[in-house]
Amino acid sequence: MRFTVQLEVMAEGQWQPVVRYDTSHRFAHCDIYRPGGQATKTDLKMTFEEALTHALNDLRDNWELYRDRFFEG
Image (cartoon, rainbow, N blue to C red):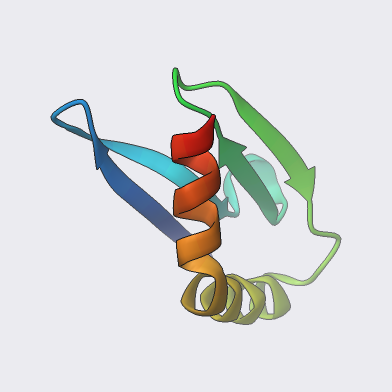
């Protein structure tokens, strides 16, 4: 199983990633982006199934917070 769940915002006329949960690199992790494209990667230390459920719940519940932090820099 593989997955990607990503929150994007329209900034400067382009869609830009804010938070991405995925299983690339063969482990479940979360990338949190700043304007300009720099990202901080966090290993979720969960199974892929647990990480997918966590990602969906987190972005559903916290998307406004992530969006606001992104725009605040």
